[in-house]
Picture 1 (cartoon, helix red, strand yellow):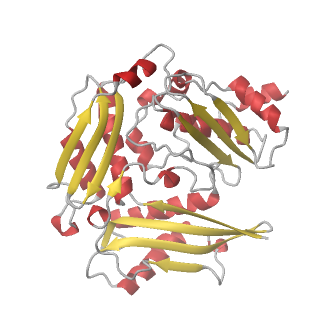
Picture 2 (cartoon, rainbow, N blue to C red; picture 1 turned 30 degrees about the horizontal axis):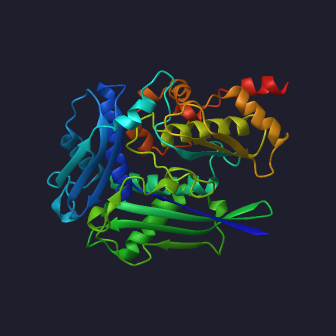
Length: 377
């Protein structure tokens, strides 16, 4: 029986992801000066305006405007013809301090959760980085699209872009059913040439040849034209690409976004830790897939729920896997922050290199395997 899986990814010229990158760059600047900064930064982009909002409590002194302009121009929005120019855009800030009602629950020895909510972590053994194959492919396409633009391998590209991949699995056979890729381009770019270049220099550089069949459908800029893009074409908002940031819709999501939030916000830190736990369970060969679910109450350090789903791929009873998780892993915010070294993470780099699947990040380590194996013995 054929099963279809579809996920998407976007470039960092996409207005939503650019908003995420700005928010995390502001977060990094505060944490660089003040490791105990409390940051909840939201960004919205519209036409040639940038809105910076949120609650920040810190002893640091940050030039927010300078940071914002650098992020935007580094991505490629650096001239008026793009209708969004980091050198000249209007920047509006509305920043207040963290609510004392929240702070009293967070700023204590055992560190209470910065908010209530549900977080999920997921891992699968179908790829070396324990991420869904189809989501890896979507991310690799947008990363390659950014690369060929920055290196001028394909001339006439602009920063905004997105990719979508549909993968077919049928009795162990895998092939790509559909690839959709849209790239912003200059006015005078020949569209047929653009399609041929993207197929050659992006799609075929990323997707292995054996995944293609004669039925594979490739759609490049399906509307036929993509000149107006970025914030000039669509409003951008922090946290609107939460499925792109996680597992592409192939696992549950609690709804909380990551970018612009410091490590006390369990929306971010507990989602990272849940991924860490799920990955170690799969890496220990206790299941082929694992989804870890955790929920918190604001101001309370211990989770109100920890549960798992192995999608009937478990090698030992799920109850035993859950017992192992409760024995090996500590889901309190204080332990999460310390064990994953979250005070020293460069969060803009995490956002720019995708939150999951990169072995350089502490929550991607499989260093709990030996503890798990010892318990099994």
